[in-house]
Image 1 (cartoon, rainbow, N blue to C red):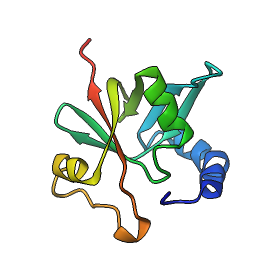
Image 2: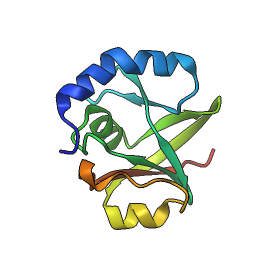
Image 3: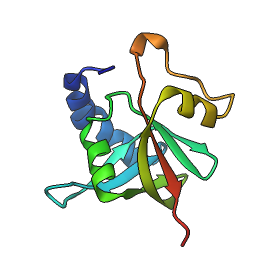
Amino acid sequence: MPMPRWWGRINKRVFNPPAIASGKRPVLTHVGRTSGQTYQTPLDAHPVDGGYLFILVYGSGADWVRNVLAAGGARLRVDGHEIELGAPRVVGTDEAFQALADDVARPPRLFRITEFLRMDLVAR
């Protein structure tokens, strides 16, 4: 796993609440797979053809990723707009880097990130 889980717990409690409140970062709203509770997670959301790509800095075992996969989708708030996303799937480096725009920085190799989450836009 690229980033240690203890850092994720610190992020969740210390850094995420102000990031959500600021409204400046994309925020993914998802439903807990066992609790049914609604959660909000600030993330870097990269637009790709037909959807969005998320870099999984904590790997595919992160709670928010497992929630999205179990639910089959989530909502993303970007620049004050709500976007419905579906068909979540974990993809590898080759597919992710091919989908990302050339001007989007790739994660440093030092982080050993090999998993990404891709979701498609849901037509309303």
